[in-house]
Length: 293
Image: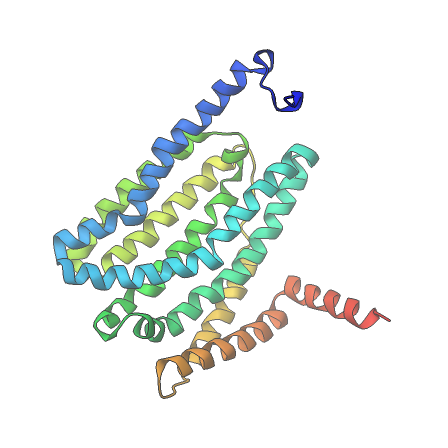
C-alpha cells in the first residue's frame, strides 16, 4: 500500500505560507535575476554597438576569464554563507548573526584581496595561454572587473538584513537601479576610454549596489566593514603584486606557476605578520598540531 508519510493532505496546505513564498520569490525572479543578467552582460551589447564585434570578442574573453575565477573564489562565499547566517538568525538571534557576519567579512577581505591582485599579475599570461594573442588587449580590463566582482561578492554580507527580513522588493529595486546605471555608465565611458570603460562601469555599478545593500540592510542588521583588515590586505596584496610581477620566464605557463607560488608565499607571510586575526589562527593551528601525542 501507499506510505501515509508521502500522501499530501489538503488540511496541511497553508495559503498564508504560499502567499509569503510568492511575495518573496516573484520580485527575486523577475527583478533580481533579470536585472542581474542586464547588470552582468548589458555592457557587452553597448561594447558591440559602440566598438564593434572585434572589440566585443576581446572584452568577452577577458571578462569570461574573470568570471571563472569569480565562480571559484568569490561567488561560492556568498552562496555558502547566506544559509548559514539565516540559520544562526533563527537559532541564536541578532547578536550572534552580527558577530558571525563581521568575522566572515574579515576573512573575506583577507582572502579576496590577493585574488584580485593575483589576477592582475597573472591575468595577461593566463589570457594568452587560454585564448590567444589576438585577445591579449583584453588584459587591461582584468583588474577592474576583478575588483568589481570582489565588491559585488560582499553584497550578500553587507545586505544580510534585507535577506533576513525577506525584503525582496527593495533588493529588486536596487538591482534594477544598478543595471540601469551600468548601461548609462557604459554609454558615457566607452567613447572616452575605450575598452576600459565597461570594466570601470562594472566596478562602479557593483560598488553602488553593495553600498545600497549595506545602507538598507543596516536598518535590520548593522554589520561592520573591517577597514583595518581591508587596509592590511590591500597593502600586502600590492607588495605581493609588485614582487611577483618582476618574475618572468620563457613561456606563459611557467611564469604563471612561478608567480602564483611566489604570491601565495609572500602574501601569507605578510598577512600573518600584519593581521592579528590571521596570526591568531596560525598560532592556534600550530598549537593543535604540536600538542597531539
